[in-house]
Length: 82
Image (cartoon, rainbow, N blue to C red; front, top):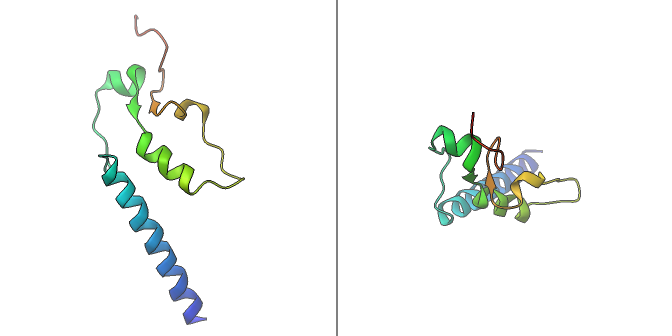
């Protein structure tokens, strides 16, 4: 039982290290800083996260259509004229 738990931890650590490396490679980190305009309308880059999702993608994983262009904004593509 202990061997199985240890193997599971090693696998999780391997996945975590791979994800960390992919984020760093993409110039990303755990946290993002962006302006309100970028978060709402212009979109922020999610390409590194998208790359990670595609690496670990299974048949059960559905990547949202709004991520497929590598950017995400809550109202991306909507006029910001209020």
